[in-house]
Image 1 (cartoon, rainbow, N blue to C red):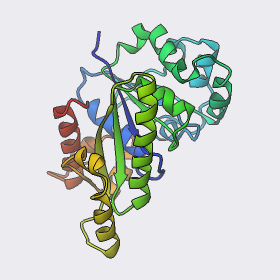
Image 2: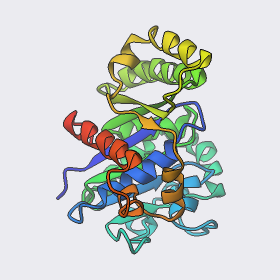
Image 3: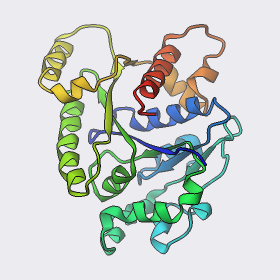
Image 4: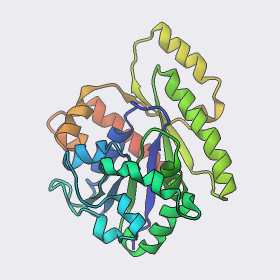
Length: 269
């Protein structure tokens, strides 16, 4: 039985590489063939599903959990031949109904936690479960966050809105998790889309960041630079390591692997 860790990359600000980071993390972790990984798409936009699997998924999703369908009947096995140790719970536009229908259930904030425990034998087969959420703090997000062992907040360089979104989310989650007696599971913040060139905007961002002591204290030493190689690897459905295997010591591969190693050293992964 694996010592399963459920991971969420999150921010209430969109456009900060949340889905991309979730997918590329899964691909890199899957390089260890002894590890088993589940990607869980909980976003009605289904961007993760479209990137890793197919554009039009018309089979079971998390919406079917409301009918008490088992995890085994929802999970898509070994959908990528390059990484057969990754499985998927897919999403599609029908997931838009999940939030509304969930309101009819008692203790609705803990619905997925109950379903998860009812299917624990299935989920415990995985070393990592990586959930992808829409960029909003809603009932679906709360369900996933209550399950999460580690929440990693992504903050986009030179983007004050992403910094404010991170702080707003942490304030809300600190209140709600205390109500549910959930330990603080926000484990790290990561600066993404980093650009070395200093501008007036970057100086403003750096100055603003100093006001958020808690978020700054959790920030990894590793940052992820803005680059096209991550997007290219994503489109090829490959890890950065595999996509850049012919390029020795490429900065994007070094940065991404350094981020994962730092997260492992901190016990986040």
